[in-house]
Image 1: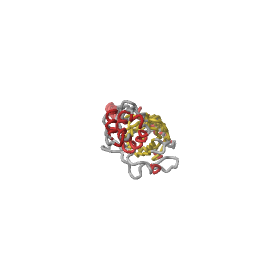
Image 2: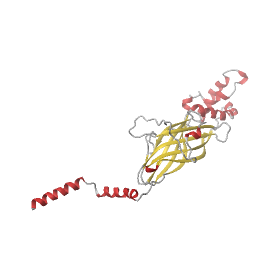
Image 3: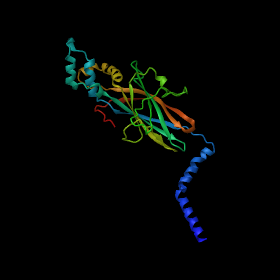
Length: 284
């Protein structure tokens, strides 16, 4: 009899050692309630916050770049204007040194009891939207799983497409200039390097996401050249020109939301203006 009780006690102890903890079982029960009650997943909420300039040439660099292009040579003597521009502003920088980049910040709220991944993002940027020299660019990004090293976020043939007419999709921006808007990725922590790894929005919580984009130099510099043309007088006298970039931003974020499948939520349009500072910005 005593031996039987000892064996039963040892068996019970062994079973308890391999069973999940009470806390774990409670969490499983909590997560299973909506499924048992037939509660459907809820749509996340995307709140656009702002667009912040994070990289740009200084006004002096812009003046040095554009001055020899727009200021005519006095008396038709070749090279005189370029020499005067160099004396006033220094040597012109290369097109690669003229990069303009910005961060888009969002807050994503997830009301579900499970995390949801951000699958794709479409962003369209229009600079000088009220002018005749409007320039439009659009970028579609597909985020990759953590087990896909070297992923570049390059979209596939079915990426950034939406069935709803109320949501922007890539086909709405067919007239966008090629390589005008370039994505650097997304990150959720301050100081973190942007990447194309799929971010997760935690269950019953929210996360701030920051997406970084850069303008391809050719199209944007062509547009900014019009600003320089309007300030030939200031450039001739060696004065710095105020370069302002009015913009309009809009787009769509796609999520994978449980049984709802792939859902899309739009943002914008949001208008604003970036003013190029005197000193070059430091890229974050």
